[in-house]
Length: 227
Image (tube, rainbow, N blue to C red; front, side):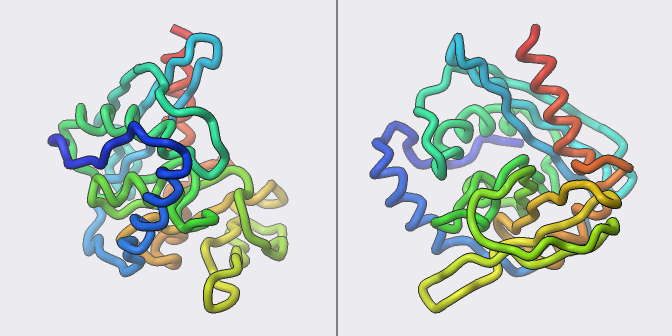
């Protein structure tokens, strides 16, 4: 992917929160990818001792999920760990990895949240806005909101609800990806709907709890960190 315009990343946590609120108003949840031929999984690994971040992106054909490209970047972390501001800590390094791609993926899948975020701008939404690509957050744990546990069978789902300015709103989907296994948290990031986000994640399952694109990206950055 070619370089893209970014806002400054050197800011205080208070300014980062204000920027999140501003950027969240630009999020669109309409389905835009008419035909999906490629999908990318992205993840980060952090070495707390050295203060280094390791970003990896793997691109797959869709829906076959055959890997076609992978890139990685390591760089010093410049933003502290603050819950709700993950994208300011990991985003700059992830974007360096995306810049190295030869492929321009149709959809981006992140290990993190989309609009299932207190200010409706998790890492999937933030990166989706900057990269201007349809993006999905696929988290392993709850960041915010309430939900009812879905039925135990694979494919069962319930809405993730968070209070908004006009009352409760659905910000994601609790999705059971294997029978009687802990569900995952799927939320649209940008340029995609709730239903489409879930449909894509379901097509990325290959027998494991975590969808293949982000699962392999997680393994990839883990191996980079060890090296």
